[in-house]
Length: 221
Image 1 (cartoon, rainbow, N blue to C red):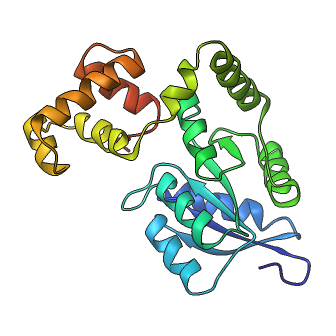
Image 2: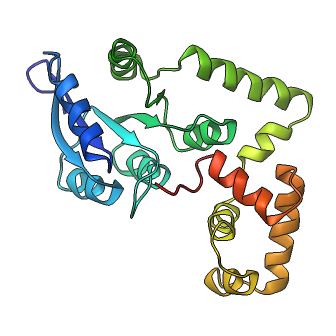
């Protein structure tokens, strides 16, 4: 929704201070205008569903109600012209792979320098992508290891049920309760657990939970 040579931007982040500071920084640049701010993915979806299709969405990964993964997927399906720049504390390989699968082509860490953030915004809007040197190295590492063993890519290719299982296994729910929540049999849950033990190279439920936290699948913000 470019208007009068100004690119429109919507921010989605549940940290109000950070979001407002980011909006103030962006609005100091004449070529950009923040037209809306949302606390979570659901609010963002409501804005876009009303016809507000921005040129760029700057998206936090971990938000309540509807997280960055779900929001990116919705945007890809319902507002394909809107580009997405993800702002996150996580840059694990599995995180980058999942975001690529959802159509995200720009990643920056929350501790990014303002000058690099400006560069990232410009690159995503004008070129369609932005990868920092660190992200480039991680992605190269993923595909280099994939060429040799396929292990890293397989780790990233988690099914939606496996992702939901990892979220639940990181809680205090019993395996029986997890089975009931996912409408699966205890035997099927045992299968998912053993499969993930092998896929993620961990040996316990604690290992699964640590992997989920480090990868940004779950957050305790």
